Image (cartoon, rainbow, N blue to C red; front, side, top):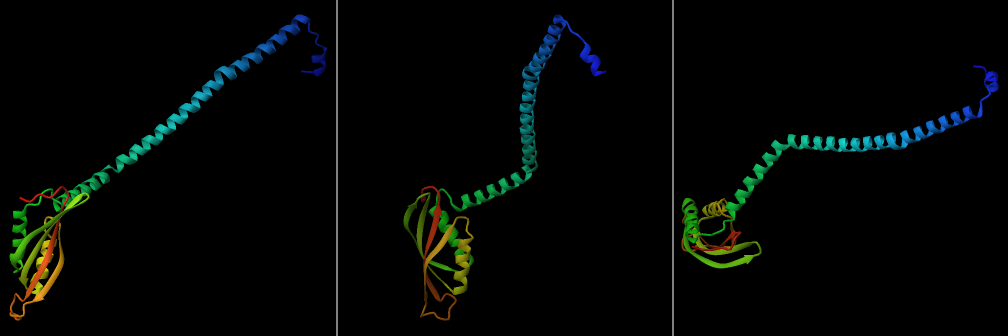
Length: 195
């Protein structure tokens, strides 16, 4: 189109008003489309994209957690076994008769003669209770060591303390040439009760 011809076009007042109204209407229509249709749609779309990304992240986290579930079960089983072991080592009740039997069995298995066994004081220490027993035994060094080691492998937690050994000067060459005094400490979680 030639510009000269465009300049020569003469518009009437009515035509000019119609063109102006059309431009204003197109402008308002564009503004209304942008402001009331496009912008809310874009805003809604962005919000849904954020929600979708969060859900995808949650899904990935759930997949990762599900893939680690066998490992979790294995660890939980190991923790349960350790807890059961610790609970067996710290019994709720200490049976005096059962304790005597266990100590006697360990002594007999290691050729150790128990001369005396006497309960000592019971002390509450926060979450647990400590019960002491004084023992006097007769044996040799090797058997005494095996006896103490055997007590360490006992079902309940036992600690040998205050060990005092003396050579039996009358029977230096016998198999039972050591007299030993020791304190056996036993621990339990609940308040100790002897039966």
